[in-house]
Image (cartoon, rainbow, N blue to C red; front, top):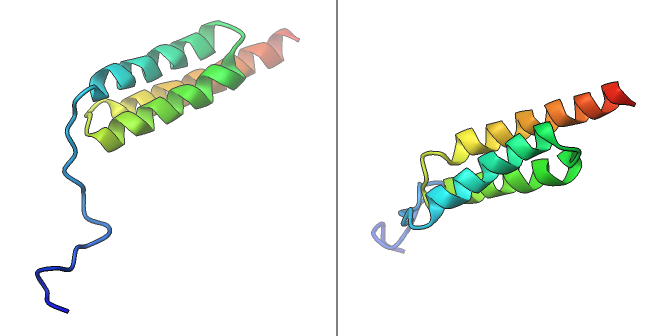
Length: 84
């Protein structure tokens, strides 16, 4: 097999960041909603998934959105546990 046809499976893919930023913003919004409302168990994982999808699509806000959603989920669950 020639060296030109082989592709590194761990190399970054060239993805178009089209529609990636709104998905990242949706992930951040879901993270904030997870922290402030009682929907931490639902909004947190969906926000993290949206952040990861945005990251894979090429948005620079994808990883921060994932972390905002994760922190929002943790805070929301801690607040719900404290208030019980």
